[in-house]
Length: 391
Image (tube, rainbow, N blue to C red; front, side, top):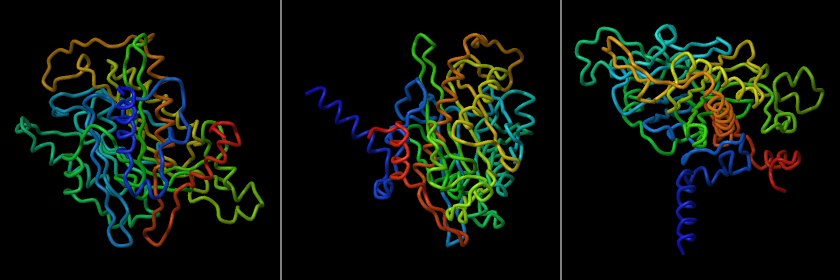
């Protein structure tokens, strides 16, 4: 009986992570398709919020037939991010993009605000709104400088990006609604109007929990996917098998090549946010962030000329946290030799988060264009053909 109750509880938790709309459209996370990269297990939610204290808030803007965009906010802990700063580092795989606040973050090795993701031409509006919101927080009365951190991808295909539709109210809502627990994925928040590998992209998340023998740390990842390439899933050439991949028009005479993917040369962008409760300083967080490119590469990206590929990593551990007014910092952090398992967990979680962003996305029409979600039935066929999913 106890086993039966346990199984029922697991089923209830699993079904709660999918909305009725997603069930109706047959959208599933990667693990539901038998796609489970790597060797380490995920956390309870298989999300960045498995790192204790990390919260995510999202606002989706779909107005009329032209606005398809949004805001995704990642808060590093439950306190004031300015007064209790976390060490952080940014890795730039390819710098065709904008990441507001990146120079100070790199110089000081710390975050002093939450992280916002949005559309390209809305970066400055989002930064201004978050600065205003932060300055209104308790204890901020004498603050005279703030460094908002805002990343972006260009959703101008499905979204009327020139209208710059992000408002201060949307930013505030994303920040104030941020919560732990399950994270909505696919065509939501900053992923509302994005395209990945020629299909509908979006927000994806995943996590890994290290065994106690390796520290028991959690690594969580959230991605905003809007890039191209030749999609592969656990090594299976899904993009080629489904006739949708970068440079297709140049290398194939097939009739399917006349359609071509939306990102025909692999252009676009991806933002990767990595959180961990492992006590890691900014130098080693830079090493963690650089490993995100390995997970990205596993999915089929080649970081094209027009792709902005950014990874930001931060640690929530209290032993490395930095009070804003400290005259001296006394920290305790992992040594170099203890970092390898964190690197592995990062690569695995990045890969799976990208798959989730695709598999959970729903087809979208906007700005005079339609982008289809990838067919999960066809993905299953390819995975079975290559021995990755059960027959």
